[in-house]
Amino acid sequence: MRSTVTVAASVLATHYVDLTSADAEARVAERLRDTGLTIFDGLAGRRSLLAFATRIMVMTSHRDSDGLTTIHDIPGTCGRAGHAGFGHEELLAHTEGSSLPDPPRLILLACQRPAAQGGECLLADGRAVRADLSTRWHEAAVMLSRPRTVFFGAGDGHCTQVFTVHPGGRVTLRLRQDELARWSPLAAPHLPTLREVITRHQFRLPLVPGQGYLLDNHRWLHARTQFTGDRSCLRALGEPRTSLAGGFAISSAAALVPVTSGAA
Ligand SMILES: [Fe+2]
Image 1: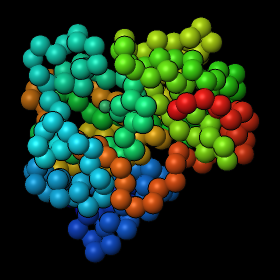
Image 2 (image 1 turned 135 degrees about the vertical axis):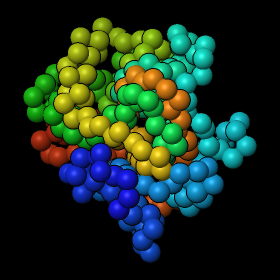
Image 3 (image 1 turned 60 degrees about the horizontal axis):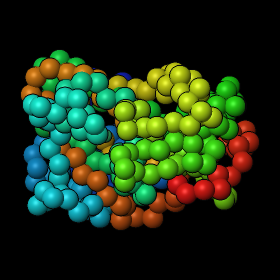
Image 4 (image 1 turned 45 degrees about the horizontal axis):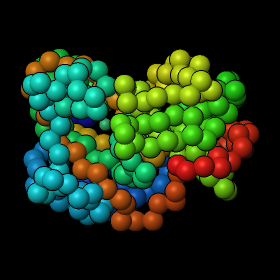
């Protein structure tokens, strides 16, 4: 195991996969099915990340020729709605592509150059968030699952809900918390509770070069602390090449919210 000493041992024990092992791809697929998250290291450099990405996902077409996006601080981005990822300020927990009808299922991100200060990734398992809400703040879970209680995006955005409960009981999650989220009076009062629960379940990934994560974007929320310096990460988005059931399973105790009868 390389360069992982700064990540909590408990997190690594649950999510780390050694990509040099012979069965790495099978283990990655297993982690995605079981926990929705894989943490790895050793992918410094565009070529190695691209090779891994193309093995595990059908990458979303992108204006960049190879499908990888460089996430770094672009001067002048500050204050532009929907472009905060290319700044250096804090990013609150969100779903990638929340304003799209179908957000990408997978996010692959690897650090290429860490920040001088800050810039840690914060990840929260939506399954744990949903379970916590359902058992302790049931009304919040209900209201945040009500159809069409938030609009994400600009004029061409998407009217949706935070938790979509599908027939059969599996759940998908989508969220953004910037100025491109417009909440209904039914959902808005529960945002402080949602934020508190997300914070409780977040853990930090202070990534070093080559270290990164692959996550189920319909289950996990990602965030970033503000930073200084020339932080740079490479990111790929796409759909899994292996079978991955839609959404995530919830416990019977957390399934007390009715099926969401609306668009995702
Ligand atoms: Fe993001």
